[in-house]
Length: 138
Length: 138
Length: 138
Length: 138
Image 1 (tube, rainbow over the protein chains, first blue to last red):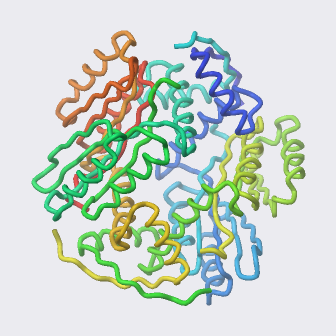
Image 2 (cartoon, each protein chain N blue to C red):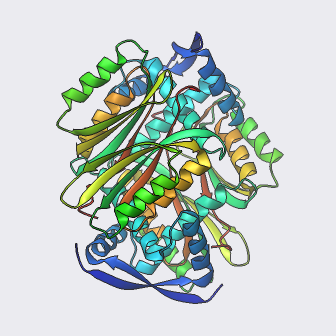
């Protein structure tokens, strides 16, 4: 962890008031933390735009476990990419529906491809790839 | 315009370096301006989430002027809402295609509705509503 | 599950070619499934725009477990909202960093508030709320 | 313009009902047009992800014309890139604020760079790049 800098930011008082209200609504008690989070979120977006960058993300899937061979297909897909899929969690949302979250690590382009293969599987009602970071570089 | 405040923000040196590089790529020469722009963009998003808030936006449309009755329909729609449509600009992109930009002002819900009516017209190849601000409140 | 309809969609051959290539890149082998996924994703977005709608989402957090009292704070927050937090998964990303995924269920406004409280905690390097669905209504 | 295809899409009746309600809210009277618009919007996004692709976009700027030398700077910037900037429209939003919309054409990377230079100028309160298409390839 690098040393801490303290920088000055010039800002209209009115704008600062509005910002303080906005971040309070979002749960922040510390203005510097809110600034840093805005910055880090931009940097995560940027990292994911580079296909070869090493990243980590989560894939959220909601599917009907009654769909014939779907669970088998999802398991098969995951084993094909087992080196990238660090862990998974499975919830029984209801009689019919499952929610599965996978943590996937690898090159941005590979993680997107794995996410695509899972989300596009027939019977998956909804899926999303969430991009995040290994932490080290932020 | 309100008076200027100068606030201190604590930030890791490494993160600050990365932020400085990011904003330089985006054309910023002034770090405070980049911070203020991040804040203002969040506030614009928030304003548009309130249906009754007074806002201004632009609607960008690309369409084929050969499509029968399309120009008439778009003109008709615009006149129905003439009080909200401040101005328009029209470009001949090519032999077939036109690009039209409209500046629309009103309640967020109304501006969205007008944008929807224009973008959904048959023959409009692509349309987008861009949200912005009257400036005063930022 | 409702019965299946078969609808006709008129589309230029060129546009269809481009769509087929796009969905193949994303892993689809079935065009109807790609159409249905586009629709369902729009419906999920719409549901989340209604504060009182019952939804489910995942919160992804990356944080440094060395930050003093952070783990305690995150645990405390989760217990305050234990009725909404269905399950969590925790990974040790590296010597310093943890990735935690929580599945949160409740009114859209509550889920957003819980996510905000977690993501805004000091020491959380990056956090995102991913919106999804209970499945039933899609 | 290519010939029209008519494809069949299999879809649950319930999901179809929800889709029909959604697109009606957005102003569509024709289901095929709504499908085509979903597709075209995805293709526009894809085109803009290729730095060398020829694209067209609009830049919306809101600024205070009292800021010293800002108008001069924006004009200067536009003349530097005059070959890419097809046209502009200027509105006096209020006593203090101007809204300017520019139509910019060129390689995706160049259009983004020009937009960045304009949006990052000190005194520009809010700016957005809206991506669209020449029409021909959709």
